[in-house]
Length: 398
Image 1 (cartoon, rainbow, N blue to C red):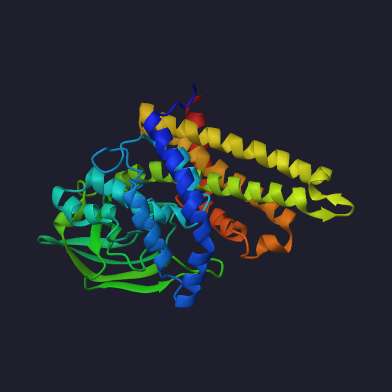
Image 2 (image 1 turned 90 degrees about the horizontal axis):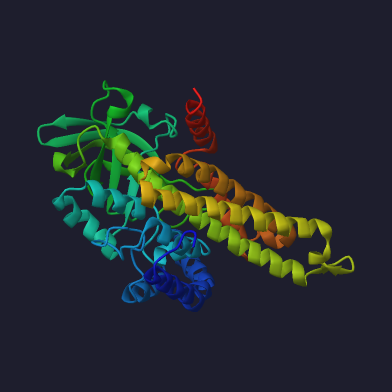
């Protein structure tokens, strides 16, 4: 069978489906209410802590790590349907300790961190005791071209002195540490200038300026502007060899893009279900909306687009497992373009079907739209991925 998964992965999938029905979906409104009542959009409400404790007790925890030392030991392909299920609710990834950017940070800490780094930062991150953030994008230069980053990490004996201006550092509110990408040799060839360094957020010189609202909304760990001003950390906080930051970033982004895409597919699937249920029951102009030909076209096109996007993403995950991340680069770039655009197309039809309800926060659709639009930029904008895809294809015929 194509994309066959283990019995263990199927069992975990069944458990997550039940957990979503019994705990996550019923908690969505309670979660929103508790956050609103707190007056702090970044507040983690009691209902979330309760669900996390239940998920951890059941072993539905850190499912994203293929290494059995840190997680259940399932493959990238086996994780994809689990990630899709989590993507159906904006609060679900956090419930299972499978939220970005912690997932990507944990992956590179596991692969490139020293034993000391793993003990101090990775272990409590996987236990769910702390959160983290990833600090790469800068306001003064293009985030799509990390070779041009201006932040510096200058060596001073056994320490790095970090200076730089970052923004859209996701998850920084309440995070215990940041993984910072900064130039340790600004005169080296472009892809050998940067290093990635772990910086505890209580380090003097780590200044969280603000959480940047996204389309008028804020929440979770935020997307933050940060200034590093003579921020000193030990050289031993570096991940991997010096000047290997770009390589580590690419290793981080491969699985992360698959995770983002499967969450987008999960959101699109749930929105599609909301649309189908609504148009079957909403009567206008003499009959249900679902009997109108243009609505049927929306339903048919959405069904085809979701399934096409899912199959391409499953193939990318399968190729990562069987041939490695490098061999799957083309497919990973392809899904990063295809999936968010599919999501936006589907959500636009859903919103049009629901009318005013579609742009309200009475359903999860509006929040999904905000997330989906951001995904056309996160981890590389469409235009960069298309450029990379085209160049690789053209090289085949050169």
